[in-house]
Image 1 (cartoon, one colour):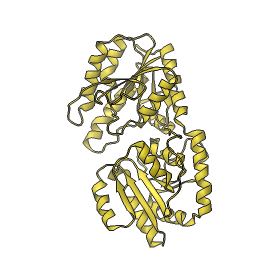
Image 2: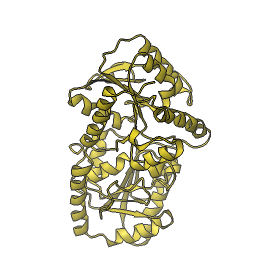
Image 3: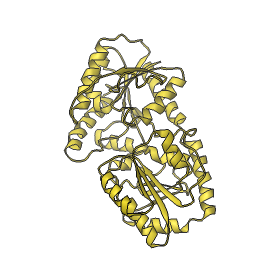
Image 4: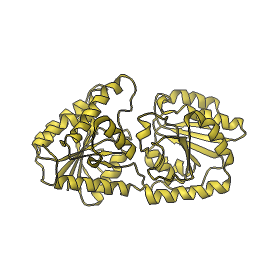
Amino acid sequence: MNVLWFTTRNRVDLCSTTLDALGKGLAAKGHNVTVINSDRIGTHAQLPWNHVSINVNAMRGRKARVLGLKMRDWVSHEQFDPSTIAIVDWRIANVLYRTLQQNSIPWILMDRSPPADRGVLARLQWPVWKKAWKLVKNKVAASGCAVSHAHMDLIHSKVGVEMDDMTSIPAGVDVSLFHCGERNDVLTMVYHGRLDKHRGILSLPILQQKLAHNGLHTKLILIGEGDAKLGLQRMAERQGDLHVIDTLPQEQLAEILACAHIGLLPMPHTKVWSIASPLKRSEYAASGLLIYGIDHRGHRFEQQNQPDWLQLARQEDFHAEGCAWVRSLTPETLSINSAKARTYAEEHLDWELSVDALEKVCLVSIDDPRID
């Protein structure tokens, strides 16, 4: 099987964990993978796939469309094997799909997240998202991939796509990279990802302060970039054991998580976060971290019974319940639940499970393409 993966995500800004894991998994299964994106030539040289670099110079809000148009031109000038299948990000599907049809290439819509931006850009993106999923509803696309069953429920309610036309490809974790290590002497809480205000990030230093007022000394590590970063750095100058760190490569991130105790999920109960399958949740578990966060469907695991090392609270009770829960932890409960979290990740969260699901939907789409 030849897989063409058209994506707006880039490896250079560390926004391609899913692409890396699924692409490597498909290649390991013997499939020929080609990634088409705007990364520079040579940046994929050590990876197990072919890379086509599309140069894009456009303002924010137009980059995806310009990228899609250039991808369309590339497809028009290539020849493709009959066993070819395309995976297409929703942001560029509306621009690209007709050319794929003209070249008799069945394709799958990939949606790792609906529009997460706020304000004008989000209002512009939602119609594009709906139009892309209507291509699945109308059988123009062979299938569509979401990140969770909650995500699929949203697509069904907003666009009317049948459940049978979608597959859940949840965020997994490389259990060989993320591991348990020797824990810090001070109880350490960690968050990594975008440090944006609308993700509830500013509630985390407050949690640490309230724990301190309750006589609980903790270390808080926040890793990433975003519009809350400068304010957090100023807090760190005044607040002991608050550390704000730039985005890290996966290998360095794994070492920090391995020494922590609790992974934090502060994203609020909104439409976008309630359907997510956050990568960090799986990485926390594989690192043997207990997890504390806001209670909504996006933070829960798909299994009906939630593990006891995952503690979720209503948004309005986040600080009070967090203090009570951390106060209840003992070295013994930390050790026992750390081992349970690691075992759960090995059994339920390995990327291999998601690779198998994606391979299956690709093979079915080639055998029975739904192209008008």
